[in-house]
Image 1 (tube, protein in one colour):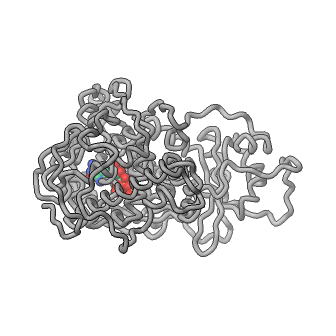
Image 2 (cartoon, helix red, strand yellow):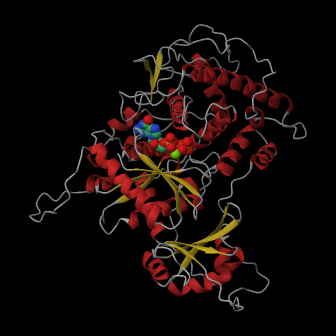
Length: 566
Ligand code: GTP
Ligand code: MG
């Protein structure tokens, strides 16, 4: 499509750009070559410095906008998207060849004469109508204006998605379609890095080394379209990694402001000021809320030009390094991301997860459960974190200012892990449900570091050892009832999925007979359906055949919800 834009507007050929797994389709059955997280983040940050966002009256403004803006440099791609509130607002993201050209476009911008607002310069612009009829000189007659994306961040509604899945040839294809149609797309990633760049730019005068780093589902490869942006703002150069030198040899030393209070209070005070700055000065930022008493103090805000909910923190980088770990697990094997998408969707549909935090399992904990399962298969699909730690080189050393050791190998070749497991994703999905149907939640904790179940150190209902702070439990919030519900739902899911596989093997897919496959797995549970009220016994393979390192499954239990496990 981009080539069509170039043809229409005589765009110069584009220098081939690196494409990232997060934004590309992985052909089924082929291995992907793994990318480094730091390269991914660095290239997206650089891309943001070359981009501007222009509000337009509709996508039809593109030829005129393009003709106007190319005076400042070579536009190599353009994307249209809409933000829907009471009415529909249209935006076009223009990507220039270099940051200088984007700056020239920004520097050329004027303030609206009627403007009573604060005169801030930023990459968020709008395209003023001229009041006279413009000639679309570059529109090739008969050819339509095209953009790389049209309404590019629209989320497919559930009905359309289920219709798409219904048309698939088999469950394997349904999983692939679910992933392709719901994962965060290229434009979504661009907008998130622009949001980060806006914050970083805003404080760059006082803090030229400051970094605003996206983490969480926006960058770990497990984000879906429309996901919130988690952002960490660092004022110092710690985030530059091991290359950053504190210049011990320099005889010139900066005068600095002394810290007024202890570390946490200081961070809270700084965040109050940052919150004010966002609220008072940054275009697009609205509904700023300061949640400074939380364990990790955050500022929440909405960006009306990007249609984004943003959580900004300043505390420590362990969440960022955790995202790097998750990103790497997604890069190890092309089955990991589609499988996790499918399991997250299932958990959402049966109410195990909820967008607001509470006594239920979070998406992050659920992702840990899937990764742990993939470390457990007889032929593991993912390595343990200890394997990554053992392969670390000196350049992988990362210790946060709170002393959290985030050292693990970043170089896939050095880790040298490859899996011999060739199971299809649909088989892995069923095995996941079977595995947790029989997992001893009562006595065992899940350790991604060890890649095996370990004894539970306390009485938490669900215990997932925090991979970067091993004395903590990632799922400490999960109540006994929610853990029990998880056990019941995985059994039900195994039962449903096994029936679907059997039906498919007997009759093939009959699209007239709907719903089928994943649609039945994602159905809101019907309380009237009687599921086998006994311990789930897998019929495809014995669990003991599938998994190493697990203890014997616990004795048969009723699926009744009042069966306490701890
Ligand atoms: P959604 O926001 O639900 O789409 O998923 P998310 O992965 O972004 O989860 P969330 O916003 O809850 O957390 C953001 C990121 O912080 C996660 O992806 C992890 O990288 C990290 N994180 C969350 N909880 C923990 C934790 O208990 N320990 C550590 N080290 N990191 C965490
Ligand atoms: Mg998040």
